[in-house]
Amino acid sequence: MSANDRRTVLIVDDHDQQRRLLCGMLEDEGWTVAEAPSADRAFGLIEERRFDAVVLDVNMPGTDGLTAMLRIAEMDPELRVVIVTGEPLIQKARDYVVRTGAHDVIAKMPEPEHLLGVLDEAARITRARRQRGAAAPGDLGIVGLSPAIQGLVENVRRVAPSQGRVLITGESGSGKELVAHAIHALSRRAAGPFVKINCAAIPRDLVESELFGYERGAFTGALQAKKGRLELADGGTLFLDEIGDLSLEAQAKLLRVIESGEVERVGGTRTATVDVRIVAATNKDLAAAMESGDFRQDLFYRLNVLPLHVPPLRERPSDVPLLAAHFLAGFCAAEGKPEKRLAPEARELLEDYLWPGNVRELRNLMERAAILVAGEELRAEDLAPWLESGSDREDAVGLRGEIERREAEAIRKALEGAGWNVTQAAAGLGIDRTNLHRKMRKYGIARR
Image (cartoon, rainbow, N blue to C red; front, top):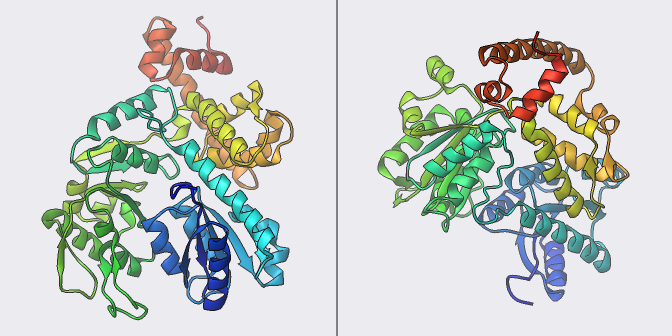
């Protein structure tokens, strides 16, 4: 087995003896093993390299295993995590923990054959997901044929080869990180690292040390020096997600790095020079944040050299069936399920839904459907109960009615302005001709 084919696993457990026993057993079975005595150390290792699976203890000082599992899912959504615990309560709640994101939950000090079987499956799924998500040459992984998405792809191809900083705006779940990956893949830095940090997911008092790194003894718990994300991204791209949540103090320090290219670790005196292209993203109104004094104007103009906007999914309904089919095929393959297809009425249901969670919500829905829906066809009645629930339903229906009324008015005006030339009206509305015909039938719009 070549080095590239060897499966890699990260063992996270604060008990040295138990951790080393697991490491030794897996190494004997041909795995490449890394170990971490804490969740925080594990996060650093996951940033630095790729693993096929993680074995994660629940009870650890500092960040516990279940919290760490959620953080790992944010850092590497494809990576499968196996929870190991001696707590009967968590073992009984296995189904809940698996739904929350774990690949499996097994008892502490498991039988070798059982652990190896679970890890083999976890590694296979991780690799299948990554292979499915890897973009082919020229393919950015951005799915959609709507004018809005085709325009976005064209702009990505235009700005990527430059060295200019990019600010990506768009609602949560709309695909901003995918756009950032595409920019890096098409840039001159594609061979360099792509490093990301979610400014909203890390406590504000830790963001500075994550960005700039720290020296040993800089604060309580800093037992060894650590590179920050800026140093790790040297020669590549640093993606600052949810930049609007960065504290004013961190904003000032980031501005100095942009201006000077120099980084100084927390608790250190040595200055390091870095060559990093910054791509930032936000779902916040930074203009309003500047007005309120929560975001620095000078930093905004430094970041907003090349602006890109990712449209919400509700503004490109013709892309919904394409995305749904793409996600559904991928999840069926990853889970070892037979291929499934969308029934015509299911496609219409998805197109008409407002998607408050955007592409992320659609992706999660297709994963749930791939696992839970029996048969080869997804029907509207299979999906409808998962789209709206509780008190949100009434608000959503009212909002949808108002949006549909305005949409129908806009379509009629566009058709009248184009002399009822459907092709011309569709171009003016920024949608395709087939989609306009569907909407005309939906709203009963016809030439009088």
